[in-house]
Length: 204
Image (cartoon, rainbow, N blue to C red; front, side, top):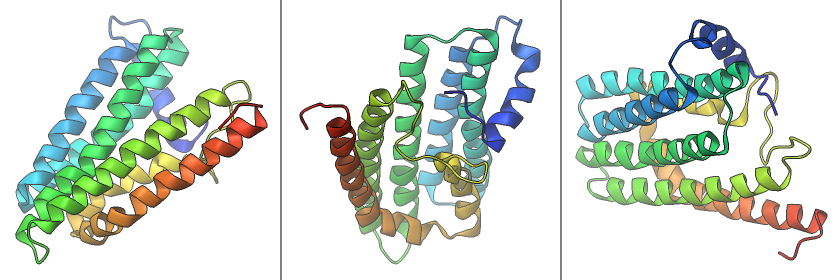
């Protein structure tokens, strides 16, 4: 299903000069992955200068997550391999945010516990992403998503807030909350997968 969120619409305009160029959607996905890893590495340092650069890299990476898919659709270069690469990049970068940001908070009052919080949050994200992908694949004929958007925003547009949250120094409660919230979200997604399978006549 073609994304129709505000971020998709903006990306659709921005990629038009690339449609007939040698640049492929997979090129953008690789840059998205590398810039996302670089952003998370900056967050892991735990210093303001690195957080500043990490935030910009994070926003750039998040935008490329929209741009690669739009370029694939507009140029007609969609592929199963491209989808898998995009999926792996999404899961990796999102999970690494919690790991990197948690490591960066080790200098605060949580100490090394912040690293554990980040690891638990990242693990929960990986589990939730894998289960959500199963739901999306199960419902690909209808285009229904595991977590649909609203008011012109996709569910995962919330990721754009992560960089600014680090800039403002507000990511501590996000990382701590993810210790419980991310695994709980994974359990909720597992429950939704069971219901989706039942609707499609599959054994849970």
